[in-house]
Structure formats: C-alpha cells, structure tokens
Length: 77
Image (cartoon, rainbow, N blue to C red):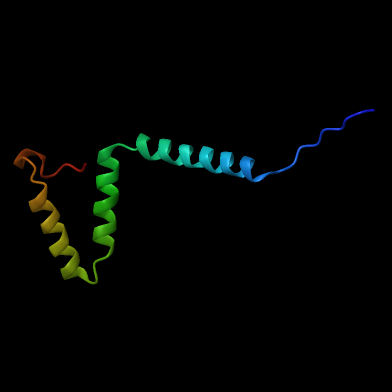
C-alpha cells in the first residue's frame, strides 16, 4: 500500500499568507521615517487646495505650524 500525499490549498495557508503580507506592509510602514510621513501628509494636504489662493493659505498655515529659523528660510527640507 502506498500513501500519496498531495498538497492542498487550505484556508490555513491562506491565513498564513495574509499574515505574512500584513507583516511585510507593517515593516514597510515602520521603515518610513516620521519626517517622510509628515512630508507626505503635507503634500496631500496641499494637493487638496481648490485654487491658488487656497494653496497659498494652506502653505502659510503649514509654515506657521512648523516655524523654521530665519537662516533656513531659503532651504528646502
């Protein structure tokens, strides 16, 4: 009598694959620095502006929230 083993895709293997994928996404999120996340938030906030005046208002609002020394005013982040 020979016993043949076959691999079946089960719900358990799908759960493991899902957990592995979630762990990878969590690791990628943790690898992003807080500065990069803050920058992405600011860019998304500015992209929601409806016109030039709204954009300028939002830029001033962000500048007030994150003041920089005067000697850094010409430098980008």
